[in-house]
Image (cartoon, rainbow, N blue to C red; front, side, top):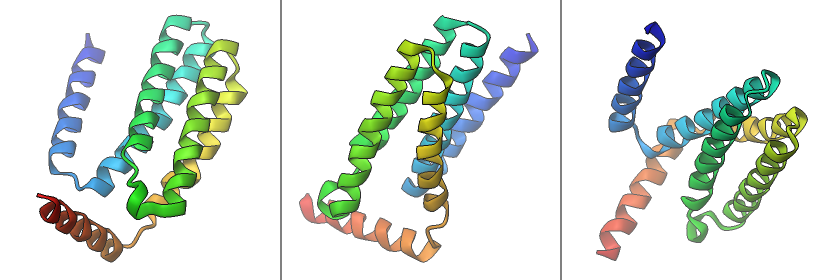
Length: 143
């Protein structure tokens, strides 16, 4: 019973965070969410809870696909292309790890995602604001 209350609080808190978050923070939250889902999948794998493992892997894949699909290939150039390929690889490896019940494969994806998340956290506030303003101007220009 207490777990349901905690989960409800987390969901409410997440909705509040999302409603006030800038695109940079949302991306960071997605990366953290993917890492958490992979960790949950590993735990379920260890406990031989295969249905739970599959659900967590599926959610991690959905998050990574979302990260991949929101890349701006026009602005991002080679970096966006490389991230797109890396996210595709992560999805493939998560599927492999799920099918093979292999924690090491899930660890591989964690090790690929962590440097991206850490680098994302290091982006200076001025660069975030500049990118956000540039994106707003493009949106206005395309209308």
